[in-house]
Image 1 (cartoon, one colour):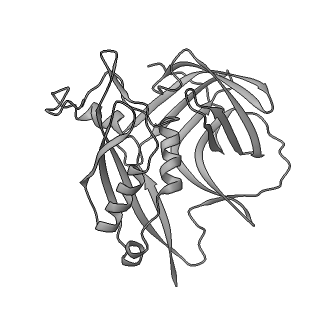
Image 2 (cartoon, one colour; image 1 turned 90 degrees about the vertical axis):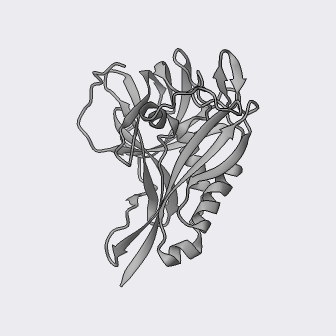
Length: 281
């Protein structure tokens, strides 16, 4: 007997690699919408927050699951000067129910930070690829979700190592983790780096790097030297609260500048040797 397990993959290299690999020759289209602004629009809290939002809100249509339908839906929209989204449409669809679900979750997004050109807020065209996938696993095999025991005494409260962002679901057996494509590397020399790995093998993007300082068991500070996040640009210090759920599982909470909301992320420490960051942009 085989059991179908639902796997929703959100591919979020968004505009960074898409624009770098296929740059249009024109900067503004005939409707005054920017294709290549000086500064891209950004979801509140950045790419990781966008991944969390989509992962928490997209629902795989039941009929599509029954039919075994999967694939990638390319959704395009325009981020207006006030951050609202307009002209939401599919550039490439898969099946009506999947297409409509992808459109629904984009239409219901909160306001974005608008793009900028020549020092002014402008309308910017944006594209997000969302991949729906179904994976079959034989009965008795382990799920693709990693399970971390809950309620254990936390003995390792160091940050050094390689961490992978994840979504968690607390069950009786412990925390069930769905691992994402965003990695955070904390070096023993107090440098750090955020890297987004493309699950479709189009390349990877360094999102931020700098130094970090551990203030206590519950707080550390990231000092950004380079960053693509508009909410956390280079030169700022970001104070982040740490909650250790397990030796290799942490919950990070932080304030998003210009927003009332508190950002929350979960990270799983990947078994690895000590790492020293030796890179520069």
